[in-house]
Image (cartoon, rainbow, N blue to C red; front, side, top):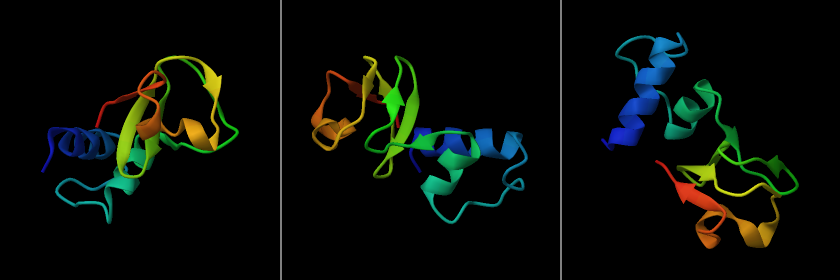
Length: 83
């Protein structure tokens, strides 16, 4: 299991979202349990915000409004992969 997935599971368990030792149905469940929102077109993003996109977590590097051509994997100047 990747270190980022383990960290997400531990954080979710610490918040009481997942009983100790139980694994979520998907990694997406763990990310939502710790308050990371899904990336979506039209959402305003600020520097440092974290968003979940296609199985990964990204950190916003420059404030902007999300649009389809600026999806995280397509724009490394706007997004940093963190997990």
